Amino acid sequence: MTSDWQTEQTWQRWLDEYHRTHPRPQERIDAIAEIKFLTPEAGGRATPVASGYRGQFHYGGGDWDARYTFADDPVSPGEMVEAILQFLSPQAHQGRIHMGMEFLVREGNKTVAHGRLTWVDGAFLE
Image 1: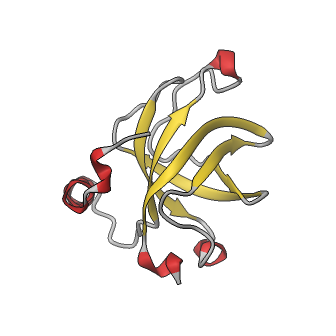
Image 2: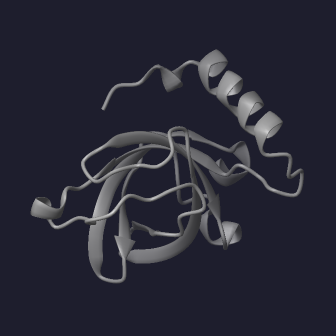
């Protein structure tokens, strides 16, 4: 997966726009990822998802709840999208996630997407 999100200016512009259009100062941004949703033929979802989606962030043998905010809404099966991730149990990921890490998005035991972290809040890297 390639992306211009790897430049600090690009993701910062997107974060600024996100905060301007989603004025919720209590929300934090834990990570940014590129996510590719599988088609129904590949075992993925049959319907689109939208910001606020709560698929499970799966890595290291565990499923973790996360809230996804997409750069493009809605996201249809088969599409690749940039997303902001907000972990519902952020303390569980401290020291375990890193930029470039690959992960799955699951709904129960069904894999519906795969992704790669392109930015991680520094607090998780300690």
